[in-house]
Length: 78
Image (tube, rainbow, N blue to C red; front, top):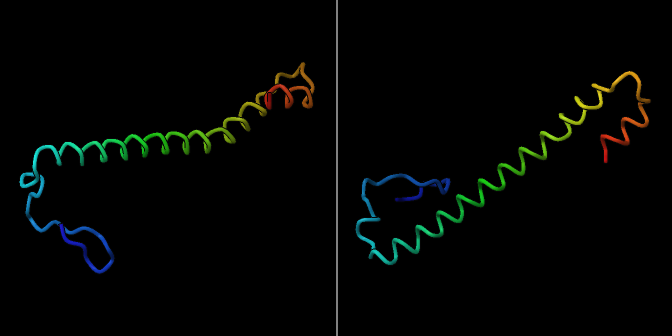
């Protein structure tokens, strides 16, 4: 893999994984698996953080008519 002027990888057609010793390949793969897992965790947390305010607004809007708005808001915030 070669980097272009922007630092992006360009495939040069070589499969370097085949040329790496097997123990080194396994070590490198562990790093890739960790990064992938960390990225998944970050993505799910970010989605949750962005989903909560919208969902909270929907729940507040669904206030049952027999509960005062102040009490409903405190309940939802809890």
